[in-house]
Image 1 (cartoon, rainbow, N blue to C red):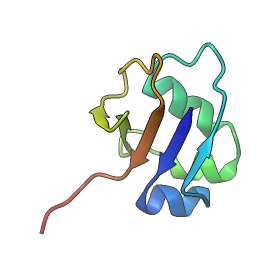
Image 2: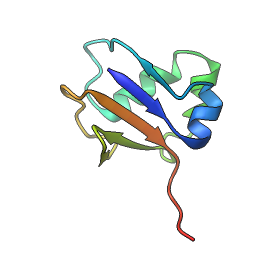
Image 3: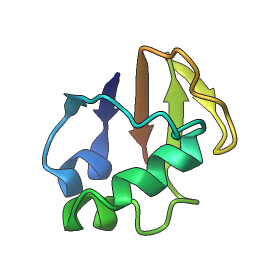
Length: 83
């Protein structure tokens, strides 16, 4: 699965994207965030407040309880602001 990181999420992790094989127990966006936080201090820092980070599954906004299923891409980004 392709994971894509935007804005300060990308800066904290140190990469814009990566392809990973997820463990079978990863079912939701929240599960994925929890798993990523355990991958190293840069991920823990990026997802230190998972309620702030937004996600999209195959380019559609997704809530933390959204099922990933057979998605090809999950993107993470900070909240958007207008102006």
